[in-house]
Length: 538
Image 1: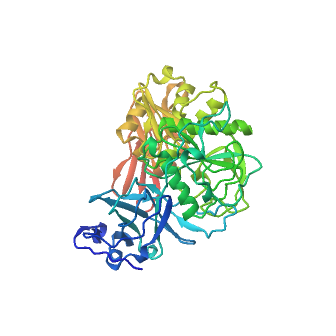
Image 2: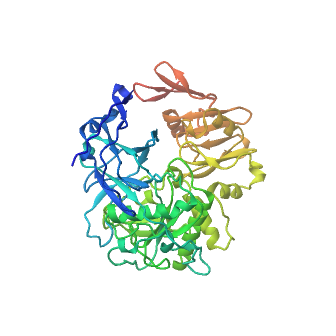
Image 3: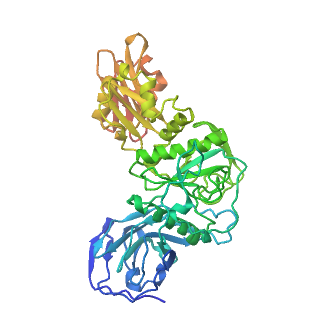
């Protein structure tokens, strides 16, 4: 039955491109709804919300639907779901409690692959977000494409009562990490369905993030996991919690899917690649912030322990065959080469485990290698290992900064005589001396150069030095300053033989000329014509 939504006060904002965005909060109480039972999921069709709320439009064809939760008792987690086959995008929500409007939270589209043996219809759903107790009178605004608003549903999850036992239980072995049991986070085993499915072996690990904001306390961790469990089983129709292990930001490791932590349990965490893998999910959203060191170390600990059971290396090639479906990156039946430790996005079309979280995969591999080797291998991040590989202080001097997040999804650390920058897929490379000063002056990796693709290298005979980057190069003739060469001019110069050509070393950065751009060299000039795209000498 449609719910009346009286709105007596509106705040209007002019959106991008002049579209009118209307943000509204009910000014008078709405009729009570059915109470949400403790430990359950209430699914509310956005199409049932009264007309005025559904008329609120934002720019870009998005619609904001205002859903009052008066009468719902409990609820600490929210999600949005759609019927099977929906290509849902751009879903976000925010919560108003006690008159305080919260921030907009973007929801990531979860893996829609059905659980093995599930008899429930497949749905498309966003990963849920932990809000904490919603409380009486809460209002949820859902912003999504207008064409999706008619069949989307707001999922309000109450995690149920807290577990009674809080004693850490080592489920792994005397040599494994302490893994807290399902009983500790309060799993309602009656929600599980079907039989546990097992792979013949384990060939790889897949690392995830829950895409939740991560603003939970240590005491709330069991509730967050219970909420995810109910969402996976009651909203998605899966047999159990999708992940094999869950790691909180305090470093706690929790048993996820039932079936035995020492056994190769098939999860529902990476559509197409659930067989022969196990999933470890970091609790939080690591799109723009990093997992804690405690979290990363525990992720490494549980992976190292499982790898030791199956005689796997921390960073080795492995081959897996895709089962397709869900967000799988590869079609069913295709056998692909992967690594033993992968981020979810390596096997599926997803942002998981977040842009920043993904940059930590080599860090995890290094930690796992150190644990497997009993500490004999170099631990730490790719930058730490690179520093050791190039001679450490003898080449770069002492560190002058902590390791930090770079602006475009990588990592950096500065030293007295240079810097090391790392980006997944490229590796870690040294930029030093005057090359670093030049790189810094134009904006580091945010500049047109991007990330380095080689270490700063001195030419034989002391004639000069070079550093190549994703989109350009820095060259320096001995006794002169460094200069940047970019784009089509760089390509032409490279085809001529770089600094060994008749042009020699660059003597200027690229600069504007009528109708294009140019760079000066010792033996002449290269000029790029913007209208033709061609480069000529002179």
